[in-house]
Image (cartoon, rainbow, N blue to C red; front, top):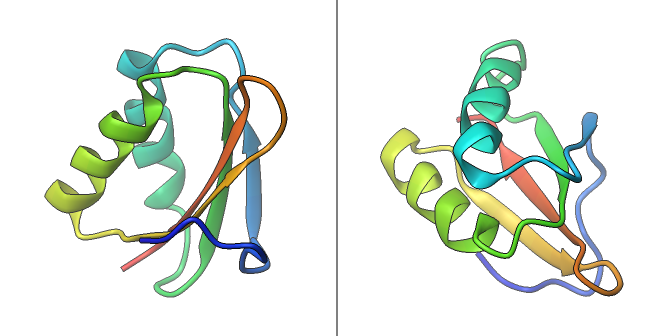
Length: 83
């Protein structure tokens, strides 16, 4: 995982601004199950704990975070690839 200047093209985008990390991972897990292996999910979040929470979730599930982009004040875009 790296902070990349140019993220991969996402297959699906999810704007989860306003969601706490405790609700982010179940929502993301549900959506990831609908993707084909290799597809990329872009998640937009404003939760400051999302970076560490998604990193843990990624390690547990094997779905890698392929890029993290700071998207303005308090917003971050995460790119996760379906294993």
